[in-house]
Image (cartoon, rainbow, N blue to C red; front, side, top):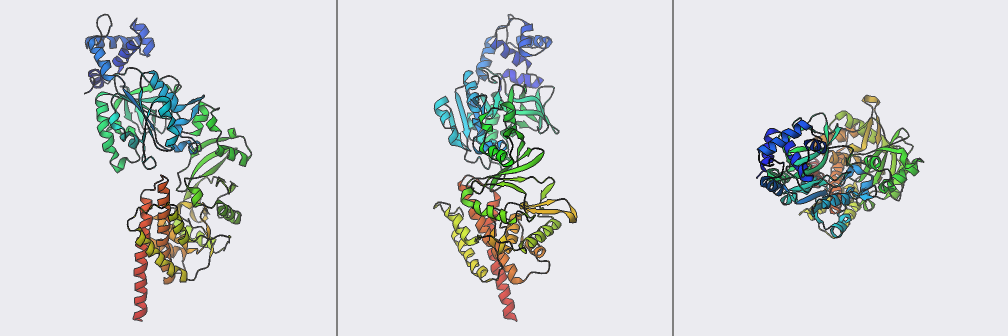
Amino acid sequence: MECCIDSAARKNGKMISKDILNAIKDKPFSTQRQLAEDTDYSLGKVNQALKQLQDTGYLDAKMRFTNQAYAEFAACKPKNAIILAAGYGIRMIPINMETPKGLLEINGEILIERLIRQLQEKGIQNITVVVGFLKEYYEYLIDRYGVNLKVNMEYAEKNNLHSLAAVADEINNTYILPCDVWCAHNPFSEHELYSWYMVSDMVDDESNIRVNRAQRLVKAKNGGNQMVGIAYLTGGEAECLRKRVPAMDKESAYQDAFWEEALYDEDRMMVAARVASSKNVYEINTYEQLRELDHLSKQLHTEKIDVVASALGVEPSEITEISILKKGMTNRSFLFLCKGRQYIMRIPGEGTDQLINREQEYNVYQTIKDSGLCDDVVYMDPGSGYKVSVFLPGARVCDAENPDDVKKCMAFLRAFHERNFEVSHCFDIFEKIAYYESLWNGQPSIYRDYLQTKQNIQELKQYIDKQPKALTLTHIDAVPDNFLLIGEGEQAELRLIDWEYAGMQDPHVDIAMFAIYAGYGREQTERLIDAYFPEGCTKSVRLKIYAYIAACGLLWSNWCEYKRQLGVEFGEYSLYQYRYAKDYYRLFKRSMEEVQSDVQSR
């Protein structure tokens, strides 16, 4: 099924003859020297290629196309294009919260519109755009350009291999491209003769691929050519991809994979390299790259940047080196530099306005801001939830598998609790369980035994309510990732961040939350409790903590179900929470029976 010229060239590792043939298609042959200028190949290579094309029957003695050449062009002629535009574009923060990457404006043009126009200029009218995040923003393209939209509903959990799998049956003489590439010159053609993947001549330390001397793309260990993402698939490679992409998509190992993984045969790609000048092709992944390409782009003037500039009393241009931080479960955050100091801006995530009372959070920070317990906040808006804080260089999160880290964090947590801070609001676990359920808008739980599980957790409330407890300001989300350790050894400084859920509560709830987020089994949970209570913990308090773990498991499971309805998935985390609700209910019941049996035996 492969084009004959492609097969022969692959064996020789050369694509020059095909490029020469394409050049003659663009401009009728005049002289070898003119061909050399048009293709950037040396005169010697042009002469070699022309002789090979004559010897293999593609050119006659007068350098005219033969029927064999016309047949080759017809067999490999571009038919359609697939534009991948489903992802969050999370590295574009803070712009991606307002505008999907494909709709960024560069020099007065919308990125994806420019790509569509460039395709259509070359006769490619059959264009499918795979959308997901903010999919409605792309709907107008159907009427304006006659494109097809295909929705990837799993854009939040899977990478663009899944997007391509949704339209894999369309791969046949096809351009595949991302929505975030700006090309100064049209990279497409009315005629192609072989499969290729485009990379830049720019060196990229993060790239894992490079162009070798034979113009093949091979895996690299220490950086290589910057990947552009535009490709053309024809012949055997297209047929291979049509089968390979759906098969890979079914395997969990490829859930986070880019579609390019399907191009690899061991340590090299099955397609040739198409090397583009970095002066002509730009992949726009970050705010900084957009600013570098078009400092007047209207998307640079986002509300988030304006908020930061106002909070710090600077011009937006003084906010530099913007980069995404790890995507949190509740929020999105980015790191930036301003006047030699690094800061973090927090942006509330999907549905956060229903989950967090920002006025209450603001009051918590006002209560503890001078305590040395939390992050150094320089700006907080109790209305929007935007927060700007000082970045702590050298800080790391608690390693829940490191006993020394855990002991330090539990000692820090105990000391915080014993300071008895007070705020005017409470965090009631059982009220929140019911509230998060109410956010499902009448939809039933995805768990078939949810009603029984909820009934069991309500049973634990009776025990919890009877236990003595001293209410104090409690973090509620005191998980390993929210403990920051600065420095090492006994002198390490600790901070506890993300106080969004904090309120008055039994402080032992914080122990439960640490355990379930860390994924602890019973033995690890017991050691955690012992670390908080080095003097020893009574049986009744242990039982209460078991009950809290079960209740908090259901609490965050309900929270995850709400986020799921918003299109945000947390994979195994949500399953773990529900399991904690069930497993620790059973552990509590067994432990209670043991206590009662001990009492009776006395």
